[in-house]
Image (cartoon, rainbow, N blue to C red):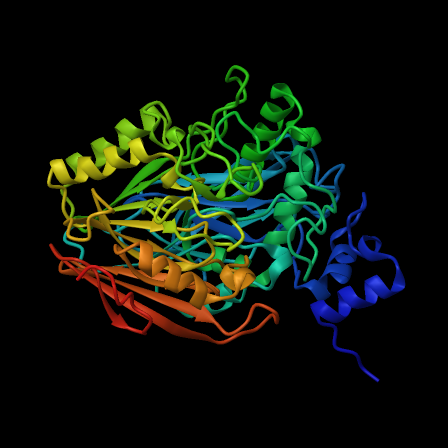
Length: 564
């Protein structure tokens, strides 16, 4: 009798046998074949060594793109995540105009070292704008899979299609969003943060396990955790098909981290400033090693390692994109939850929210962003970032939180609601300088939202200065944990007239299409994340005409009280 293993049956059998994590490849010396044999029921299938984690491209410009891979034959070995790969290896790379790599346009060699986890980054320059290219790596007598990438277009540019997504908790389900994204025609993929989660086993989700079993602090433990995520075949296939532009949120480092302030000082990696600085650098380096991104972290910074990942991309005369880092330079979150005394969800209005010294961006990044917005000459400006910009007031969710008075509770001050002065400066900058046609793309909150951005969220008649589209998660749980859509929808619509639309339980991705005349944002949702294959459908779509405000063009559940 044959047996088909699913994630649920595998985990149930492990629990029944009383071995739990011991069945999973968390140990030292686990080679690729052994690791894959034990992780395959959880959806991990590697490419052949020494390129088990596949290939990726990213940060496209009109004439260049970054190519990335990482060598290993034992990606889950905590002592040496590169396995038996020699200490130093020369890696060949090639870029061509065709999928068979016959019309070669660039090639070369680059060194890889165990000191950087045998990660490889190649900045390929001299390419043609708006072109598709194919590429491949070779080392140690083997070749990687062939990847596909695309450079940014130049003026005049008539269309740009971008997929964006965030928040892919491996323990909460399969990455079926990526399975379906493979069938889409997009130019680039934005990942807005929470590419991986740092928690230990049982800390957040339990449908499938991601090694190592403990919360990650050391450099090698971060490397192993990324290997589990890149072991998902759909994620790996999307990296091989599309160029990515990425930024982190909190979980790539530590939940709710704020600059040099960790979530707590009870975890060993957060216990002292020195320990936390070391943890931050480990996370920064692992992030760079595993993603196709240009700069590398600077370990020589005093006390707190620095890694500038905010950056600008220009797509012809159509789009000016500013990618933000809302974690590394921010001050600590304000206020306390009136029920728990802790930070984050549902807080009463506090004076710290209006502290003029509180910052989400830091002075240098703020000046850089404002300068980008002021000097842009493209049809559209886009800010790709992590946490909700728009005000989100609540009557009190969850219900047991005491009401501080109508409109006096804020849902989440980890968002820009905790940094009201700096948010006001951003909105005023857009309004006072008559900066038109600005769109914000946001992740983090595991749900869909559409907002009019105004300089006064409490004035239902205030003119719009932009539109914010918030996309749902790949797998991470949303408002199904507090009763689903309806209690949240009725509460949010009542207290936030600038909110156009909300949906809080479906998973997937969004596609935003820019043209000279307008922007169309389409929310695509998968049927399930509980199996490793799933269908996809359109949940809703919105259009912003050039010089106009957002309107819904497909789907339902619009805010009946919202702005016209």
